[in-house]
Length: 114
Length: 115
Image 1 (cartoon, each protein chain N blue to C red):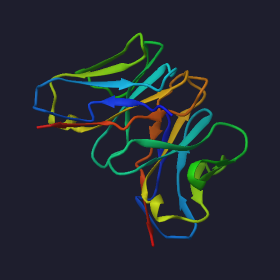
Image 2 (cartoon, one colour; image 1 turned 90 degrees about the vertical axis):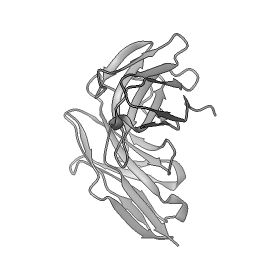
Image 3 (cartoon, rainbow over the protein chains, first blue to last red; image 1 turned 135 degrees about the vertical axis):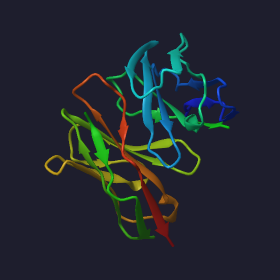
Image 4 (cartoon, each protein chain N blue to C red; image 1 turned 180 degrees about the vertical axis):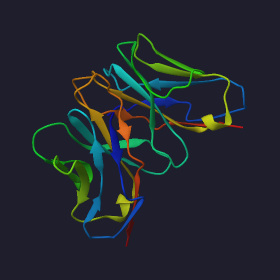
């Protein structure tokens, strides 16, 4: 079965640079969630989109922005990167916010900021 | 507000023995509870969920969990552990009574199954 696809899988950036992470949800899934998992930490919710509209907002820094496109893929844009942004970034998708409860996670993008 | 507590950082079990990974939750409304497993350098894999209905929920790979409302717990169990079950396990909760759909994760419990 098709899973959530994230690209790139690994990314190395310098401080103050920008990065764009991409997420392709499971086909027909209309809801996308972004989570950040720091080293040895639990995943922290950043932001979610349902039908291309922001549906929920968590601990996403103002330096980050995200959107969901007409084909339901999503991009997380990160600017003025800091060392503390180094983490594993997960995208998850689900079918409808109320119809299906479990979120299916992608393999993650490991971002390293030097 | 909603939160999850996993009181054990690590659980050690011998192969073939039963295992339990503990989770307690706190939500103001109806708890929607989930267990995920994470292998090294991999994404989170969904194991099972409790939304409503039977308190004993069966999931993937022989895992099950029991929802206990009075104790606000949702412990993960397996009758006979395998070495391949060694991984990081996360309990997560969502408040089913409000419009937010983000999952709140516990800190995770590292399960080590020894041969």
